[in-house]
Length: 130
Image (cartoon, rainbow, N blue to C red):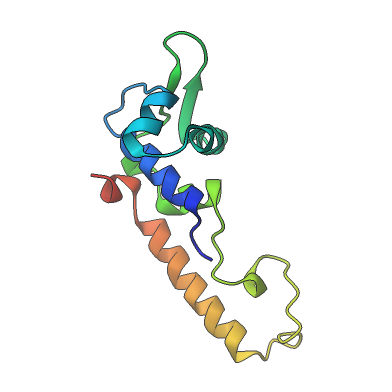
């Protein structure tokens, strides 16, 4: 699977933060219809990737670490999800059918992956959640 539920949640969380204001997890959960434990989980991953900043305590929450036009779909997917179309093309994956580099299926899937990666590199989150 290329995109996971976490990827969808990440995009919805970023949509909730698009105005640049600090938002509490509870508010994001309610407005984006994402279970609160998943908001915490995804926010942590986005924070670790440098896409969000989080603050604890009274008045805390999360806020964008950089503008959405500076964040690509590729970055978000890498931060929270699986970005390969099929297992055999993961980095360092062993494909028993492609041991000599002769598997046409592997090459086709690799081409699809390359095209998908290029698209995600060129698509900013600002374009998606406007």
